Image (tube, rainbow, N blue to C red):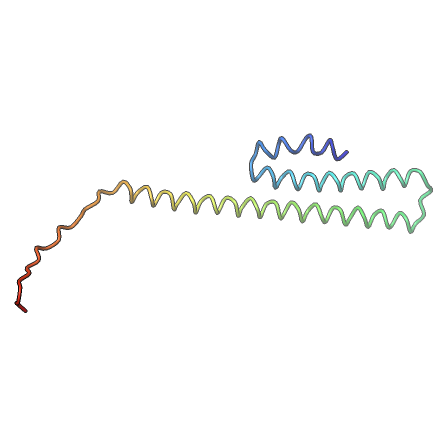
Length: 119
């Protein structure tokens, strides 16, 4: 299962850069959570469900849903932070380009008057 996850997500991560890496990480964690849910379901089919074990399974599923929501929120925050950093960088580069495009005016130094023995 993990080989399949690596096979699928590694090329995607390389393709989409930093945002792809974050998405790939969230995808891997989500896939692991999904596999855990499937394993819990499979265990439930093999043995008769008691009320206590069914409550445990439901609690696990709810905890996994909460984790997925937190990861989605974190991924969104990373995307916004990355976009803000790119915007700031673009503004700084734009400022440097405007400075480089402006003509450079050099002032002429005033003629200095020096004399020997004069104050």
